[in-house]
Length: 122
Image (cartoon, rainbow, N blue to C red; front, side, top):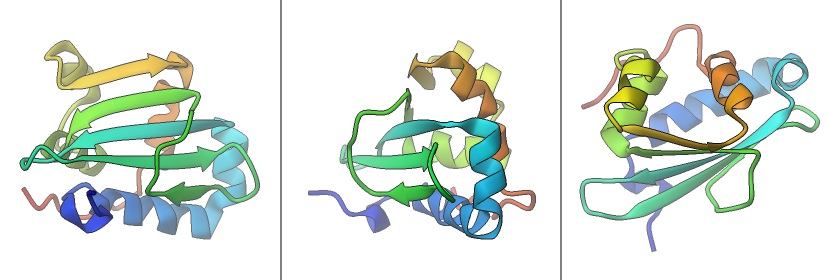
């Protein structure tokens, strides 16, 4: 079974945890939903991050749960998206980004991105 540390994108989820710790309640007020990120790494392992920005101060878990919006991406692509080096619309058009569920929530994803994202480690 895959571990969080097996994915480069783990860095992005650590940053989301920091954002939620600092301003979770206000982010939850803006977004009001849950995300499931399905990520596949270079070794073919699949990882799942459940991001709850619906209740309390929000939370991030490495697990698979039913979510309002599911985002499926490769490890490098997700890291690029969350660090601002990959344009979401371009990724979607190229088939690198798949979204199911609430598209409105997908549009609010930028509210979860850190103001000063970590440098991509590609």
